[in-house]
Amino acid sequence: MRRNIVKGSLSFLLVLCGLLLGSRASAQTQSPIITIDAPGATRGTVATAINASGVIAGYYFASDGTHGFVRNLDGTFVSFDSPLGPSAGQIVPMSINNAGVITGFYNDPNFGSFGNGAVHGFVRKPDSTFTTFDAPIDPSNPTPGTLPYSINSAGQIAGRYWICNVQDNPCTDGFLRQPDGTIATFAAPNGQGSTWTQGIDAAGAVAGYFVDLTNFTEHGFLRAPDATFTVIDVPGAPPGTAITAINARGETAGTFLNTQYSNHGFLRSPNGTFTVFDVPAACSGCFQVAGVNDAGTVAGTFQDGIDDSTQVFLRFADGTFTNFSPGNRSGYALVAGINSSNSVVGTYQDANGAPHGYLRSGNAGN
Image (cartoon, rainbow, N blue to C red):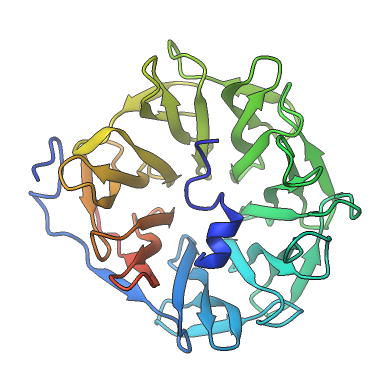
């Protein structure tokens, strides 16, 4: 599967875990980029989420294991751990809402029978209340697991869970957890075991993509609050549409394949109107979409067509672009989120291979 850009690989998360046509970069001063290293980090820091006010969540590697963190607006950090502690329960925050409530998952070495165990979902409130939850997984599977991906302002959580041995394919369906703890599970039409949830909007609509197992084609989906599904394909494109982001207003963004199997980007409005785009300066099809904010700005990463470096792009609602490199151009750069101020958070790799979080502060229009 070619998808799940930043947040989709559990193994990656835990191990870290030019002239530009139509660009604003030459016309405006670039916003400052702040490196995020949590106090006590010895092997790197990974920033995974940002909320509307600019509070950031993530995790870091210390001498005693993996810790979660919250970075407040004044730059101070609050660390937190799973109930198993930093050495046993490696923790990965995935999303933070406007109230500061965080969802994510943590590893349990005694859960499941394969390798290093499997994962539980969690909710952490600003008062440090920590709640573990599981979707209706089969605990007899070697790799049971619940992976929350996104939490909205109402506290609804969307994610996916493993319905069988994770070594099998397909094996993942979606879930929606309500603030009272009730969980509804779902699969896209003809997508039992191959449904990848990517986000949730303010009304509780869940977006993602799936593989239709009747013909093994990829499609986007939108699951409405009443549980009805809309299958989404870019008009005129062959099968191969993936929604990888949704904002609070219900705009979705992602990529689709053309007949040459090259990626193109799209933004879909709530009324079903599509805007298709390519990233200037990217090699052909060499980009991924990671987020879209309520202003309609799309964020993602691309591979430069000249020096093969990985960079971050922003596509604004007026169709213009800017791009930046948060760190060492020879290492990777990832986007974890973008808020409505166009502040972007993510992770980059330094020259020694260590991960660092970054924040590119948003200013009006860039």
